[in-house]
Length: 312
Image 1 (cartoon, helix red, strand yellow):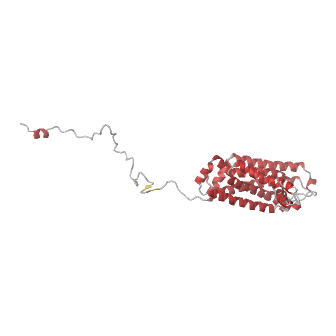
Image 2: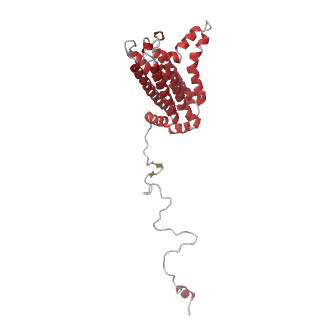
């Protein structure tokens, strides 16, 4: 007779094998790693306990990085190419045209560097327009937010814009004026022609280029303050044209004639005429350059202050 204990002990033993996986759970391969390894394990070489180390090298930025960024921007947009091309075409084209259609007898009093004056009167408007667009175009497209996100120090961004634009404008304008001055002196020479002095050549090239570039830098400051392309260009056209037109009405009044004369003396056409030394009574023109430099510096200070104060 078999007892219950004996029947339980004689029950067949199931064959030993790998553990059965329930049907609702996918089998886990022996070589499969855990989806969330602990911090500091070999599978996370850049992770540490409580901190993260980026594999990308990080270094502090400086003004040189901002200058490189602004140089990339200004040389890659079409507005720079068009405005500078039109400016060179006006300065060189009109200058060579005047030099070719005049005779040696026209330069018995004025130096043969005079032809560059006529093209510069129109070419300066291109530099004014470019100075405004360097800043205001980013506000118009909204890219200024990206610029300030990449470089949170706004004063550094405006400084880089000013340096890049002023350098490009000065080099381009001076080179165009130097070409016209060289062509004018080459076309007209002889005993009846006034030999230009070093001061006259300096004023007709570097001086005029510096004056136009400062005018463009003033436009950049106005564009930064107004943050609107059309408004800033209109304001700068008033700055350039009104001092040349308004004195004619001011000098009709005996109480305002002195003010009108001073305004006319420091107007853009008279300042450029003094730099080209068309008339000895106008002076050398460097006083006008100094006044424009002071006005531009004051405008830049105001632009920096407003940039730090206002939201984007």
